[in-house]
Amino acid sequence: MKVLAIVQARMGSTRLPGKVLMNIHGKPMLSYLINSLKYSKLTDEIVIATTSLPEDNPIEILSKSLKVKCYRGHPVDVLDRYYQCSTLYEGDVIARLTADNPIVIPELVDEIMSLCKDSHCDYVTNALHRTYPLGIDVESFSFSTLKKLHESQKDTLSREHVTYHILQNLHLYNIKEILAPKDLMRPQWRLTVDHIEDFRLMSEILPQLLAKHDFLTYDELVKFLDKNQELIQLNQKYNPQGDHGL
Image 1 (tube, rainbow, N blue to C red):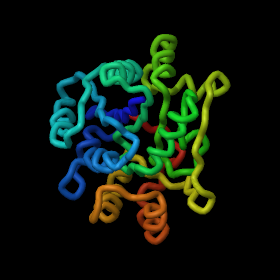
Image 2: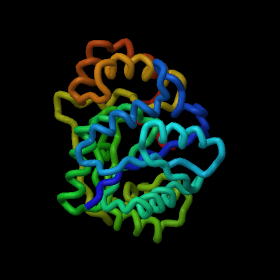
Image 3: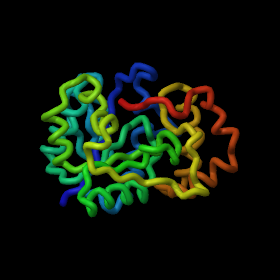
Image 4: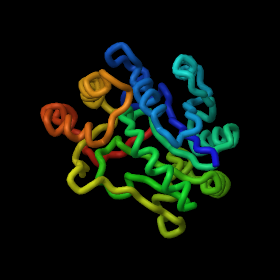
């Protein structure tokens, strides 16, 4: 079974345009995500799924420099983008990540994809019930589940948010979830990037945590932020349970 990690990214964010390529310590924000994701042991191939719009040409250029594939698809219909990308690259199990969540924990990605692959369930995530910080989010689903969604769901929310129908109809799917260890539960933290304050937080976190190597463990992340609580305050005026996505 081929495990495909698809990272959705675009330049046209309404709240913070161009955020995925904003510079952090000499590197585009998206590059931190991709370089960490490369340490996933179960991922067979990484693909950045962006749009066919000319404004997203720089994302394709970056993908080449990072030596990962880039799929150009529908600007608005993200569900179609995922389906066409998964079909093209023949993914059997798909991990969904978003470029506004630049902190990737490879071990967590592998744990979620392994559960989806080995249990033959429809959908696995660590974000169904919030125990991890907002932004440390991974979803995994089978290609057959993605195909059914693509064929059956026609409403705007389902087409834009990919797994919306699953989350609104949990009883229809075979679902499993991963919870953070009790002593490492930090649901109140906001580690996604929608606003300039979020970006300032990432500008502080990423260079420090990834100075020596390109990936980190969740335990390392929690220990660092527990010792640097002032950083978490940079963006706490925004609801840590707020929506996110590209």
